[in-house]
Amino acid sequence: MNMIKKITEGIAKGIKSKFNEGYSIYTEAIEQGVKKPCFFILNKACKFDPLLGKRGKITYCFEIEVYGKSREEAEGILFELFTALGFIDTEEGKLMGKNMSFSLEGEMGIFKCEYTIIIQMQEEECECMEHLERKEV
Image 1: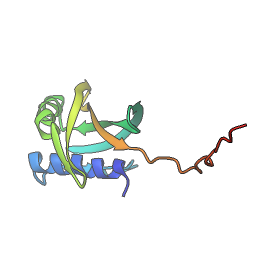
Image 2: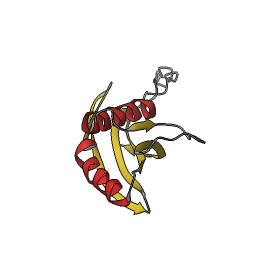
Image 3: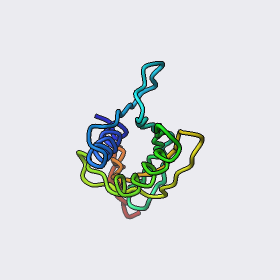
């Protein structure tokens, strides 16, 4: 399972633990039949920064779209997401949410959050140089 799916599942668990089963959670686009209030979990971007020692930092940028029955309900839900998604559980362990913010557009709210992991990159396999001997002349 890839890391985006693991983080998406961690976000869904965080939302479920905070809001119980009263809210639908979607991870893909739905054309019709959306039950409000609901959440859409969307991965918007991944950023990679190389680090010393054959390591790298990957930042996963997520947006959670919140559809409430009213603007006030959506705003209340968005405030609750700060605590619900501050730390999420994944198969890789706990991840801390960073750069969290939200905005409101009518009855829809957009909550933005980033999760960062550090990876160890594999060394490239290569043939070693032959041993060089020097003869005295």
